[in-house]
Length: 226
Ligand SMILES: *Cc1c(COP(=O)(O)O)cnc(C)c1O
Image 1 (cartoon, rainbow, N blue to C red):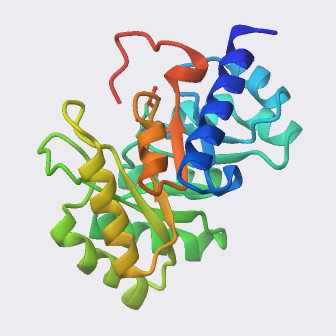
Image 2 (cartoon, rainbow, N blue to C red; image 1 turned 180 degrees about the vertical axis):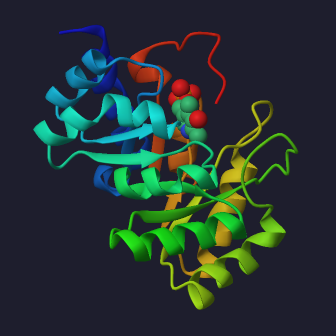
């Protein structure tokens, strides 16, 4: 078995263990395998091992790697987990099944317009900047209710859930709890939180979608910046 497939099995086992520990079923957590920077050959190995949900950070990179994979595995589900510029919205709406990074009114309006135009609607999550970090994407927690209201009431967009990337340093748990509380208040069922370093903790705090890259595919080139 290749090391990538072994890693996938190990992550799957850890997800099951973390779920059972808090009385959740393993099926209540979806693994999003984050394949950014990694080649099609590696993605194919993971697909052949049964994984179907993938995350990519960049629209162009995903559109370069996934067309044939999507054709050969029609149940493949692709999530955009990186920042989305409005000029990439037509491509993103046409190519992704889930966009996890809706974080501002201008982007919401562009998505609504394009979804109407294409008659194709990716599922949408709001990205929340739970740590209020100036360099990080995501809507500030205090502005999230207004953005949700705009999406739902004015633009007719269905928002399925919330996503966050806690600050790199420090305890992620308070960020996971904040996201969970925001989702509960808004009646949203999906919580995309947890990465290689902290997905068992995220699961203990209610995560429904963990985005795991390094623990499956290995380290990314150091030159990569999202
Ligand atoms: C790269 C990335 C991940 C995966 O990170 P790992 O630490 O490699 O598991 C998850 N979420 C987002 C938004 C990312 O950019």
